[in-house]
Length: 598
Image 1 (cartoon, rainbow, N blue to C red):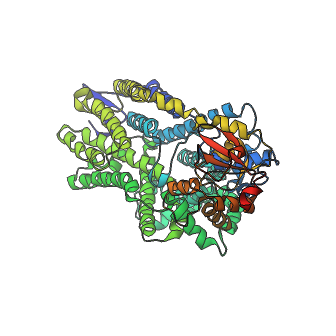
Image 2 (image 1 turned 30 degrees about the horizontal axis):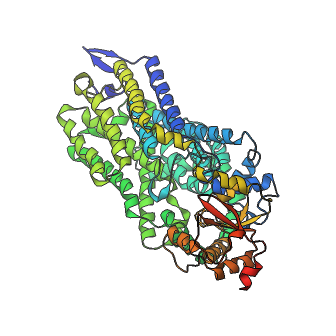
Image 3 (image 1 turned 120 degrees about the horizontal axis):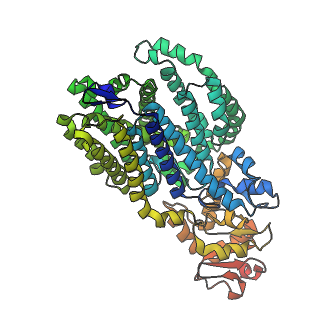
């Protein structure tokens, strides 16, 4: 049997049988079902998570009487397109349902577009196996990659729309649409997140250079590839227009005398999890690279052309499978750039970290995993080499002992073993019976592994910190221009109560002067000069003395000061308590001049 038989046909007693179109439709619809189940199980929330920062300006623009004393909101939005769109959707009785449904829908569209991309690159049940394994992992462990980057989130936020723009562009390019149309489809979505917009240009230039002309893929003539890429430049017309409109505003805001100080504050104090590269966080990404490289080295050393992934793609007899080569090539280029950026970041080059190239790490990891699965399928296609796949498959589980790795790789092993042992241990990816088996396995395996996570799924539909609901309801009864001083870790206060505060740890304006102002205010309310974690700030705030309390009243003129429950302050009268429950205690600042005169 030829190698192309692994994809399109099966040798049955000397007869070749191509799979029926209905079987391909079956696989496609099973993939759609898996994507829909994953999006539903992932959940959706409103006024939670990053909504604490991203929806503030939308509420202020919808009702200018809100946040009239909040310096963060008045400093300007760093996601202006997102705020402008959603100002028409916030504050209504139907907003919670709309936003929850929106998060589920956006997550489904991202997964569905990725499924379409897999199917175009490699139309076989192997794509379905990988999609099912990846979705099981998403349900169990969410989608956080290195540097706290994610693919799916349970709230409607700019990164979801940015990912949607990327995948729309990828699918459009792979579908052969005109470049200018591909860019026009992606640009409106990329406008929601400038990081995705900036990274769009180098990544997609490589895609069009390698992918638009399949006959150029095997030629060493880089000049021909480059000229081919120039012909695809209309892809970038619409995104360039969006960048010209939005990027100038951000660049102007991020420059100036305070830029250097602001960069240090962001990367050392506010978000080291984003900007300071942690080896432990990079370990899974590096392990996937090592596994894929080991697979490539093995196929080269074996000198068996049948075990070469790209030769497999070329001989598969399916023209759409030619997209796998350019996708994986550009993915490796992106990974190489990512590794270089990581090295520079380790060496302290802060400008690299501020560009945040790690934004696309989830896509890199997914494509690496799919490449490894294709290699494993090739290894398992031959009985004598079936055991070889065990070594690279076990490497991630041994080196990265985490639930995320164990679940994902266990899922891959499950799908592969069943497929490999079907019909004399040979993977007949085009066999109708294999199609039905893989589809059934994907659905039942997904449900078997995902349903036990139902309790966590239920929580993903409920707003966090329900014990604060009564407190936020009381705050909403105050005047709209009321100003509060709150603990630095009460990041949900603004968005849940729709009232102004002096400062918290969660939200800050991403402009240089605003970042410096944020750091100054954090020091003033916490009373600490240096800190390593948020807990240090919370402890400092909770140990506030009368002198610092009076200084805050004099400087910011707040109406109320909030502490976590039962603060041991012998210098504040019980008569000054405006609200108290088992979680928080609120002191009124009105009429406390006598306290500060003592």
